[in-house]
Image (cartoon, rainbow, N blue to C red; front, side, top):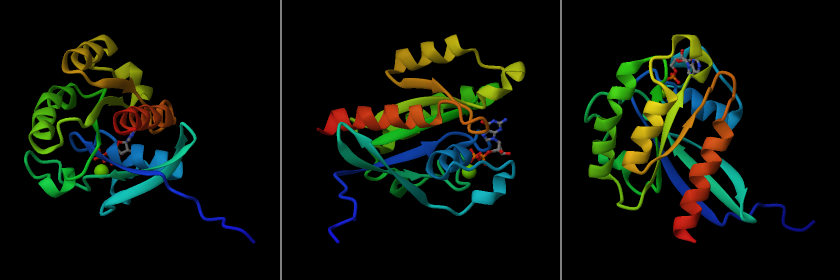
Length: 177
Ligand code: GDP
Ligand code: MG
């Protein structure tokens, strides 16, 4: 019958970080299972999810880690960052404070992670544009200054979720291939 098993060419560990309630778990649920829940407790306890995508004719398995409620400052352990080749720094566009904390998350990330880790800034909940507290330009400027990729997403509306993951995976692929 032949071999139907999928050959995996690369496995990339990506970590999700950012304040509590910005939508990290729902971004992961949307990307890995095309699901979304308004009940944030629904996904607590999940360590990581995987999804395989084709990049440059290669099967690239993304192994995406979720903090599962360890978002307090310095509560995320070094084991979480170990081996990560990508990081998504997530804030909520309708919560200024979650954006103001990004610098601190970035510092923590740079203290723990590999030097050549690919980092992407994600402004989630773009569907809440009427309650926006962080302008796209402010975030873009911050990302450019810090050398991060940047995209606004909505896990709820499934806007830019796959493109965001595809962007970070493609950039990681470029750095390792
Ligand atoms: P986490 O603590 O960062 O993992 O955040 P969650 O994924 O648990 O989401 C926190 C809350 O925000 C939940 O009630 C989600 O349903 C909601 N949420 C997540 N993503 C979005 C989004 O894109 N738009 C809106 N409007 N709500 C979202
Ligand atoms: Mg969560």
